[in-house]
Length: 342
Image 1: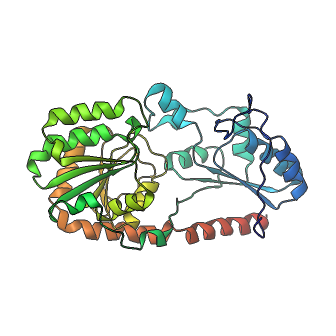
Image 2: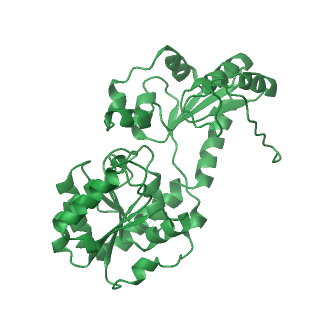
Image 3: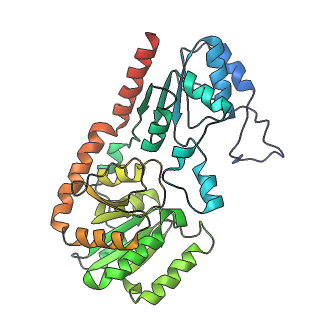
């Protein structure tokens, strides 16, 4: 136990038949209610959505007259929706109707935070006291100059490196990046496309990419590293010329912040939420799933490589001002102070 902190592992009545580690999405720990009531807390703060255990926390807060803060990362189970429908509509929350207990929590919570603009807009319809919560990074982790990736050392120093970082999967959109790159590769003779991330996550998807690549004629300029240690991933992020983020859905934009912290500008799908990119200032956007638009923006970045370093610095200034843990702590503490005055 760290002084001032208490961590408890509670029994989950939904863990039937018992499995460990318990990776089920739904859990219910009834004794949580007792611990929260006994603790006599001034503020109870919960993450990441209105689930069974957070409902218990909300009940405990109402009974004990504690202030209740709800921080939303995923108001609905986007992963489950994508798994069943193979896509997630960017405007999915516009037509969403919360159930009766969600409405109660939304209207009665003392404060709400959200990491995505669409969730912030949605929550504001039910509660006036909601605020954007930036996803922070440990800035010091990106301040070192890591060793150049071994593969990169085998290339000419003037190569234009386009990085796609993340597990290889349909939702991450590597097929969009590959098709876009191959459609204009002959116009960028010194460009390479690098996919950094595990390739065994989604059955059949990597094989589809390899088939596309084999037919493209540019197999020698597209590389898959497979899973790498975080240190090596950060090395690729630091030394790439631009980070291409072709996702079909993203609900935090954390990887954008990591890119800027690593002094690398971004070229992202407009499916990233929140969209922190200012066109031509700290990166570029392209229309989600639009291969031609993606290709056009890759070519734009290629022909503006002399401006990329400044664009990365513009992004890094935003990181340092609003996406550090110090800033998030200040944001939370200010909310605590206001709530305690009510």
